[in-house]
Image (tube, rainbow, N blue to C red):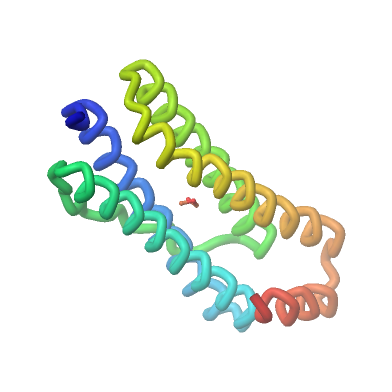
Length: 162
Ligand code: OFO
């Protein structure tokens, strides 16, 4: 069964969203480097790599379905932040937004009775649980640290081990 034009367009749109995510995290990584927080910069670079993998998974899926992939332009990410807490709060909010997008894709696949796309999307539904929970856990830790520079550097070291 051929994938619909509408589903193909929606997945291409999600490919752009995943590239945008990758760039957002790369931008966050660059900001952490400029702040001397190399562990957090490393964590964000790893996240960048994961987003590229998410992108490539969608691209491969469209190829498998014989559909046309459109490689998108990427939005320029934000350059600076007020604090490490703001960065991770932004990351957490962003992942909630991506989850909503994935759920909309699932809704569309269900409406179209596109069982193959539903099955493929299950991986992303599960992945988003992990994405949200890891960002939220770091937000909680940063909220506990308050203004302690020492605790911030200890957390930085911990995140460098990702
Ligand atoms: Fe691709 O999950 Fe984050 O954005």
